[in-house]
Amino acid sequence: MHDTNLLLVEEVRRLLSGYKSSDFTFANLARDLGKSQDSLVSAFGSEAGLVEEVLNFEQQNLEDIFSDSDFSGNNAIDSLLSVSKKISNKFVDILPSITFDLRSIFPEIRQKFVEKRISFVNEKIISNFEQGMAQGMYRPDLSAELVSRIYMSRLIDLHNPDFFPNETISFTVLFDVMFDTFIRGICTDEGKLHYEKKIKCMKF
Image (cartoon, rainbow, N blue to C red; front, top):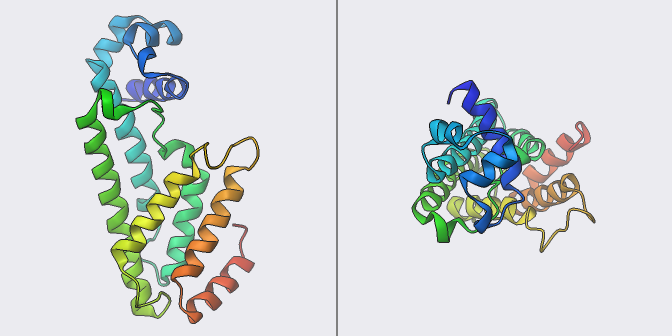
């Protein structure tokens, strides 16, 4: 993505968080951005093309978090803790910002994005879980696939305002509690001891 398009995508993302399905047109976007419709057509081709660019932007930010971390480090708990902290800090950059129902407007684009995101996170978390089991940090009686899906679903649920209104509980607190309960649920006794020592040395 060109730098000019990247800046435009970031502007569009901020607007889309407040849009309804009926609002999503190039005419409305151009008005709210203070740009011409022609510039949006030139950059994205169509509304569908714009949605793809926004979702690809968020997917790339998610992948960057993992690529910037040593997720195959010496200790699986340390790796997952480090990556999860970065996800917490950059959650606004990786959460789908299009809040209206993509399933009814762009079902194929939405499905492709969901499958890509789940596949990517599953691969990373499964690898981490298998590493942790080999190290004696994670419980051997759990399914790596199940653990990965639980992790992903909890990340998504944290940003559901029906469950967790932002005005009453901060996202940082929610994430810390989620991760703490998640990691304790998959750790062996040895893993829990390591985790306890680790969190005493860092702010999480």
